[in-house]
Length: 228
Image 1 (cartoon, rainbow, N blue to C red):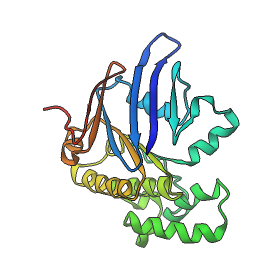
Image 2 (cartoon, rainbow, N blue to C red):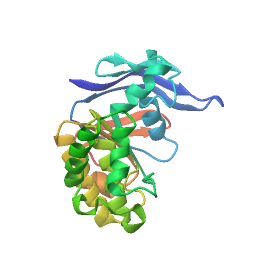
Image 3 (cartoon, rainbow, N blue to C red):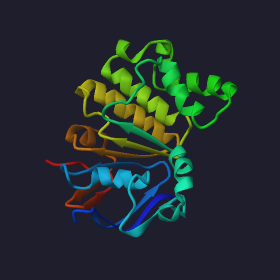
Image 4 (cartoon, one colour):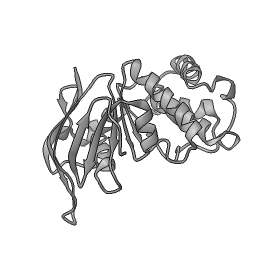
C-alpha cells in the first residue's frame, strides 16, 4: 500500500526559485526513507509540502490515496494530526515536564484524560524515558530531549512520521540511539521520512535513499548509501 505519492510535483517560490521539479515518488506503509542532498536541494520543501505549510505549484500529493492538494484549509489541522514531526531543535515546552510535553500533543486534539494516562506512559517506555517522566527539559541531555520530541510526535500513533535533521545537534553515539528508535517505529508500521545530510547515519542504516539535487531526484535506491 502506498502511504505517500508524489505525482509530477513542482514547487516554485515567489522569487522564481524552483525548489522541486517534477517529483514522482511512491512511499509505502511502514517504509523508512532517507531524503538526502546538500542544503538547498529541496529536502525541507518536500517535508513542508507534506504538512501543507506550502502548496504545490503543479502536480499532486496523495496520502493514503487522498489528494491533499485539494484539501480545504479547515481540514489541514486534521491532516497534521496524522503526521508526527521531529525537528533538529526539539521544540519542547521548557516549563512542562516530560510527561506534560507528550500529553500536550494529545490534549490539543481533544483526547480524553483516561486515554492520555494510558498512552503517554506507553510511549515513554518505548523511547526509554519512563523513569524521567517528571523531569523538565533542562534536566535532560540533548539525546533525551530528542527522545521526548519523538515520543510527542508518535504518541497519537500517526501513520507517518517526518523527521527533519533529527540528529543534527547530537553526537554520533546519541544519534545511533535515535536512529534505532526511529527504525523500531517504522517496524511498527509507521512510514518514516527523514531528511538528513549525515552520511554516517545513512550508511549505517542501509535503508531506501532518495537523493535530491537542485530540486530533482537524482537517485532512488533501496538499501542505499550516501556519498563515498
